[in-house]
Image (tube, rainbow, N blue to C red):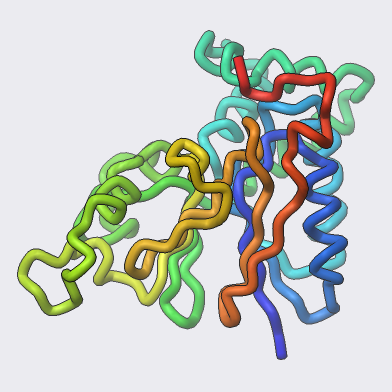
Length: 243
């Protein structure tokens, strides 16, 4: 059976990615969908991008754009760095690029520029870093930044009456657009949960790898969950995004 794994926010935790991939034991026909935020947090942001660039030469991959990836892309394009980025892991990312030459940085810039804002598969499943605001779906979204910044989709699903079912007039139209939706961006650890969270047909795969949580992956057919150790244990002398 062909498998498809969705992987949550990494935030420079290369050791966590390696642990998750090792547990998956990738097969040649496997596919991987990465939900974004590859950088900013732990000390191996640049090395993480190197790993992903190499990984996509061996496996079928979809890489989505997170807000932190957009910030890093701007820096690699020699644009002014936003103070919000620098204090949200940007300083650590810049430091991780020490020793990387112009050619390596150019390759990483191409990687960031090639990221997708969202992906819809043949089974009408949506994969997106953050969300969308339009009730007609991401194709009708007015603001591109919502793809990697919007939290209203997640907050709506989280606050829904559990008894609501499709067909009810109060059921959110955004959730009716797709068979399933997979997001990252908002750590489940904010709610004291260290595993992926499912609300109706929406799955949140950000389990706090940038902070004190774990990196998570899920196989979309079987819903098998694979997780790293707590990332703070993998980088015991660092703070990650725990400022």
